[in-house]
Image (cartoon, rainbow, N blue to C red; front, side):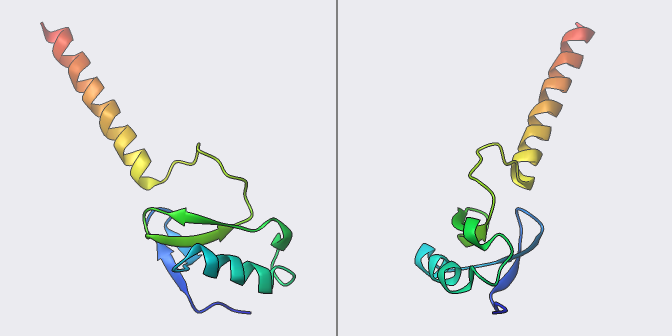
Length: 90
């Protein structure tokens, strides 16, 4: 089954299936797991960037760093760099 609910997730920057609820994502998995690569490993997960549900075959990991996380980390590093420069000038 080809899903019609594809969007480009702003956090990941590529196409993902978007489901309104976890139940709808689970139902999609139940009906299509035999036709999808890694179907037996599929699970839904909530995406804060889209405000909806996607599916993945990957295990849950808190180490995922999306674009927003990377941008915040880069900003924090630049602030530290500026502070170090200021201290060196004193």
